[in-house]
Structures are given as structure tokens and as C-alpha cells.
Length: 400
Ligand SMILES: *[C@@H]1O[C@H](CO)[C@@H](O)[C@H](O)[C@H]1NC(C)=O
Ligand SMILES: *[C@@H]1O[C@H](CO)[C@@H](O)[C@H](O)[C@H]1NC(C)=O
Ligand SMILES: *[C@@H]1O[C@H](CO)[C@@H](O)[C@H](O)[C@H]1NC(C)=O
Image 1 (cartoon, rainbow, N blue to C red):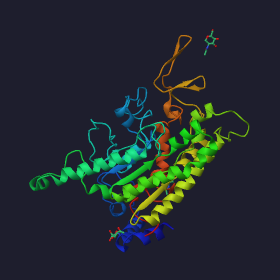
Image 2: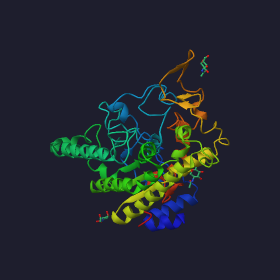
Image 3: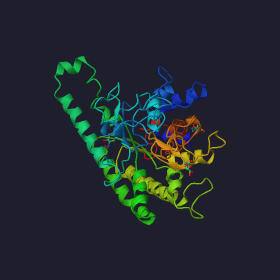
Image 4: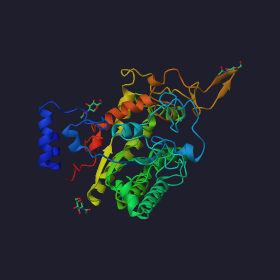
């Protein structure tokens, strides 16, 4: 099967070397990028060498957008990895950070952050912001349409900068410092992880039946966004499906307790079923995109199953009860991580002592430890359709 795919897609030349090095036992295993200086032919010939990542999404992949736009995410967020708040709703890195690491690229700077990070936007930009939904009218003003229009401006202004550059400048330097090159846009990886807030907002303000019925409209908007990106030259898409929203401790705490509502892991069954319905329709859309949009790759990444597997196997993986969360927990209730509640003279609101033993950081977002676990399973392609490692996600194995 793997051979068949490889053979269909790559020139005989590449195939030969791939096969050769496998046989010789020189394959680096894992096939990941970012190993710096590795000269394995297998890696060189199969890896896409994405020069940049453009990401669209919500708090699951916000690396500081909401912090830049409104109020900074407070401590103890960031404590495990960055040692201080980093704009992420997490004690450390998010899946998007592990993606950047895997591709050998720096962590993505939020588009909205005027100070950027040390590398600016040379290797991409992050348009994701906490609370964002696909449709407008949700929790955040930065719904997907706005994120796309920010991207359009970003790209147009970069093209403009390059087209007004004097010829001698173009020869001398490698490009604009801190900015991607115009060519990078068609070679970049476009990552999308959005939709969870459309469902959450639906659960909060409408019924489950209405939320389920809204899925095709959510995906129509999603489809418009994808077509716009395609028109701008995007070709390689890596799309995360939505997680088991019914397993978020926050969901469980506030969901009316009725028999039959919870599954064997204590997750809210009706909510997970709607997330799965969203995912199955999302997957169908990606199949449509593949036939509508020539020369593209759409990798559907089953984040749902990886997260659900983690929650199901929490105990055997050495985690505490998956419905416990590390920060903002208060006698089984929930408040925002970083806020303080004083009860009978005792202050609550700090983080737990052992975030790495928790799956949920703050009742809504996963810990770095959980994100790393999930990343390990998705980056090598084993949970994707098609099953292509992320570093090779520019090769069309579906419609070669
Ligand atoms: C697809 O890519 C090939 C090779 O780069 C190119 O020749 C062809 O014109 C492209 N087709 C479309 C429809 O963009
Ligand atoms: C706080 O003190 C009051 C009065 O002693 C008591 O009824 C209540 O249960 C205490 N709350 C907590 C969370 O311990
Ligand atoms: C991908 O990684 C996971 C986690 O390490 C591992 O269990 C799985 O076998 C790997 N799959 C492939 C195809 O490399």
C-alpha cells in the first residue's frame, strides 16, 4: 500500500532512492524534518520543504492573536515551557508549535502582534485567535472570513513591497527581512483548525438539533474560505477536524446530568455525536475540494480520534482523571485560568503542581503534555487521510 502510493506519486528516480535507502537501513525513521543537516536522500526527495505556514483557527492554535488584540493571557499560562505567558491558552506549546518544530520552522507569529516574535513573519503568519468561529456572530469578531481578509491584505502588501523594490535591491539581498517572499505563498502549508466554537456557540445559545442542522452552513463558509485561499495560490492544505468537545471538563460540568448522557469516559455523548457529524461532513467537503481544485492536496487530520484515544487511555498513559483540569478548577467548578477566587480566606486559581500529568489545562484547552502526545500521532500521518507525514503533505496521493 505504502509502496503503491509512493510509486504512483513520485518519479521513478525518487522511488529508487527511497527504496534503496530503506533497504540499506539508512532511512532516518520518522521522516520528520528539522533534523538539520541530515543528508538522507529519502528526506530530501520526499519532503516538501515548506518555506512557510499560514494558520487559521481558534484558541487551539492561537499563539498570541487574542493577547495582541485585547488583553494578554495571564499567568500561570505558559509556565511549563515558556516560563511566562506566551499568548497561548496553555501551560506550554500547542499542536501548531509542534507542527512548526517538525517542519524546522520557527513558532508562528500572530498576524495581529505588531511586535511579532524574533523571526517576524519570514516563515509564515498565524491568523488564528481564541474564540474564533467559522461563521460570524460567534464569540469573537475574528471569524474565519476576517482571518482570510487579513491574509489577503498581508499577501497583497508583501507583493506590493517586492514589486516596488529597485532591481539592485532585489539582487543584493535575499528579500525583505522578516517577511515571506511572494513565491512562498504557493509553496507554503496552509493549516486550518476551526469549527469548535461554532458548535460551542450553538450549544450555548441554541438547541442541539439546531446546532446539528447548522453544520452545512458552517461548512459552506469554510468552503468559501478554502476557495479564496486557492485563488491566492494555496495548494497544500492540512485540516484538523474538531475534537471531542463533549469530553472537555467544561462541557461535562455544565451539562445537565441525565442518565445516558455520559459515555464510559464521562464525556457528554450528544455533544461528541455532533462533533463527529461535523467531522464526517468536513471530510466530505475535503473530498469535494480535491476534485474541484486542481493541483491541491487536502490532508484530513483526525484529531478527534487521537484526543479521544488519549482520554480513553489516560490512566494507562500515566495521566490523572481526564476530567480533572489543572488551572481554574474550584471545587469541581470552573473559572478562567489566571483569575483568583478567595473562599473562606483561601485563594484558588493557581495551577496544579503537576500539569504534565493532566490532559486538560484549564477545562477547555489541553496541556502541553497532551498536545505533544496528540502531535506525535498526527505528524507522522498515521491519523490522516491520506496517510502522509506532514513534511510530505504537498504530494498528491489521492488524485495523482
Ligand atoms: C497543475 O500543475 C502542473 C505542474 O505544475 C501544471 O502544468 C498545470 O498547468 C497545473 N494545472 C492547473 C489546472 O493549475
Ligand atoms: C466556607 O465557610 C462557610 C461557613 O463556615 C461554609 O458553610 C462553607 O462550606 C465554606 N466553603 C467552603 C468551600 O469551604
Ligand atoms: C506514528 O506515531 C505513533 C506514535 O508514536 C506510532 O504509534 C505510529 O506507529 C506511527 N505511525 C507511523 C506510520 O509511523
